[in-house]
Image 1 (cartoon, one colour):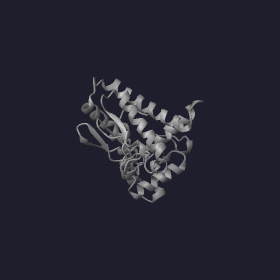
Image 2 (cartoon, rainbow, N blue to C red; image 1 turned 30 degrees about the vertical axis):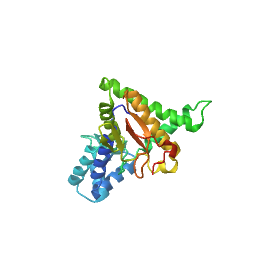
Image 3 (cartoon, one colour; image 1 turned 90 degrees about the vertical axis):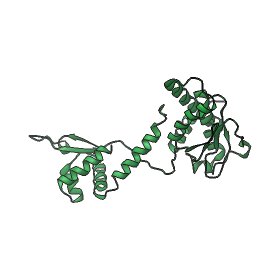
Image 4 (cartoon, rainbow, N blue to C red; image 1 turned 120 degrees about the horizontal axis):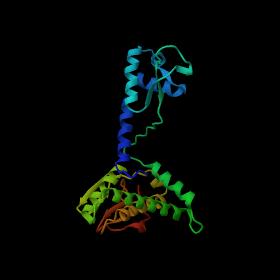
Length: 250
């Protein structure tokens, strides 16, 4: 997991920009043609694939390069060396486009579960390993952010302000209800949380509790307080823990 809390939000913005670039039909068809070619493609080949002029194709290809979907270079197409200047060629990058509104972080959940499987101890069951892994990941993230920002002592108000940046970046849609209470309007793990609430909500709670601990936020705790359509966890000084309800996040 990246130590920069803004990284997930930046990635989402980049994905939206990329989708916008691909909304133009000729551009999208050229991008598909180049991906399927499995080799560097010239402007002439890209233009011919959609039946447009070389000049117009160059315009669209440059847009795809600017969006990080293609990379450009100068090399003979198909690996054949030619006399004189080599043509400009294009090939796909490794960029993966994922856009979800509201924001979902299924990749984070999968990564935590994979780590749990790989590190499960002899005295643990699968759920215990998952909760431990989630807490450790949150704590490591909090410790890294604290080392980078050096915020000093964090009481409830400043601590929640420090948490908002991370929570926004990971799609929780935090809302400050009071100066010492933070409500999370979105569940980044829906609809998986609805399928296995005890496990997923437990991991979510452990992850956020670990982050508070690693960041050393005093007087604030993460508790299970599920509401329909929202995250199962709230952060605050006086929030009521409803964990006995099973931590269900719908």
